[in-house]
Image 1 (tube, rainbow over the protein chains, first blue to last red):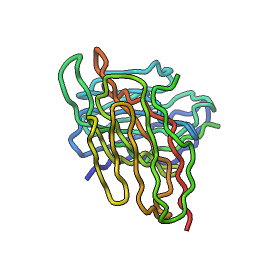
Image 2: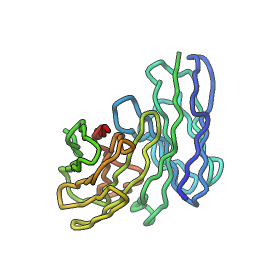
Image 3: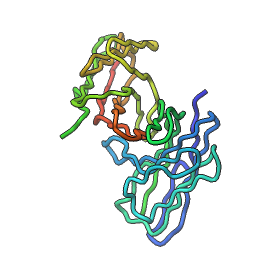
Image 4: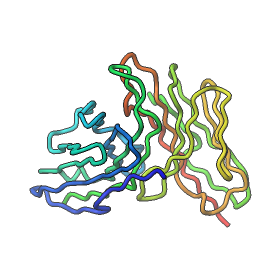
Length: 119
Length: 114
């Protein structure tokens, strides 16, 4: 069963708030991802964790702070966001293939997403 | 310039009217082509992974095929519940890690009416 669980499903926050998005998977995947998706646009990669270590940061502003407490959990901490950060935030996971610089992900499975509105 | 192009942008079909969606990519070194289905307000649902030209995969009314430069998602006798946005994504061979770097097309919004 392929399942990535995200909470909360909806979040409304002010520009001075601090909140977190949470993600969990129990498929034994060692790569976890955060994507951002705006309306009518494809998902955009934000962060990648492989073996619980941050592997890729796609030049995301520091007001987004990822955390991977263990191989099953992924958090995205939010602070001082802007209204333009309102979007669907998608967590995903995949198995890993290869080693070192040739590390690659297999099929990526997405969660249902967390709708974030910044007011 | 888009590296992954999906067409058409939108497609309206009557129930039972078969058709195909297209995904073409303009770069070489494919390490996987992925089809997803996305319902409004939800995350993409994985459908198929294709790795090499000539490969085909089927699931219920859907069949995905791959050539050297494009993929087709064939929908046979669609039903209203097949209405969704269908996303195509490719993973390319970089010199380094390709971890997580999927190049998505903009999607085809499919509407099937009774």
